[in-house]
Image (cartoon, rainbow, N blue to C red; front, side, top):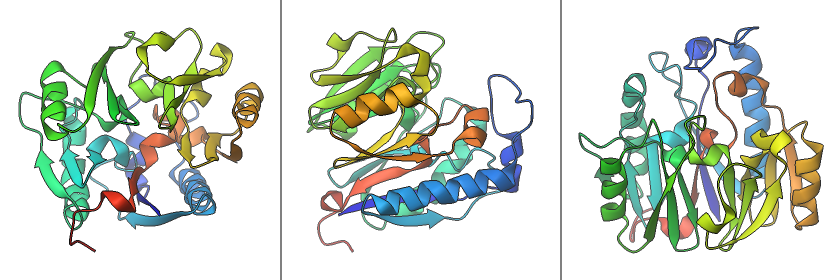
Length: 260
């Protein structure tokens, strides 16, 4: 069984971080409708969904993935490279602490969960403007059972998962012309460079939640055997967000022994 943690869209989402100020601006009401579609897609893929309340003081709080990295009953509570986002973490820690052993990242480390991609027994972690060497070192200590592989990212890439996503224990989706396929000890489903945004997706078993409007990417994933669940993403995209960043996916087998 798969558990998915989400966080609601605040009214202040209209002030979320963005590399370029969106025009037209973010519409929080429409964003909530799209968030509902995302939740429904997760449930259609067999996930049990839990939704945390929004925090109006944290415009980006719906991008819950960045707040924690979860594996083997451990939840590493991240310290975002974006100062304004660090207040998002305590509410996420409070929920994960009920089922997971918490490890809290400390200064001077910074890390966003969107830079971390687990494939089998490996966590690939992007060196980015949000994730530094100390963050990667603390990640490696928190998950000593896993191999941690740093990945250098182009300056134009916000997070590792902007250009790739896990599809299983030995398979990844990867945007063409982004980072080398040899980076990963896995087979690759190629996403066309012209549809790079679609490389960010959520795979649960043979189901894949994908961004609407990317026909060539959808064809590649369907050809790889995935049943697709397209969802609208216009509003989160205005805030430099996408699909994986809206959830923390937890396998039930990752819960702390003795927890409920």
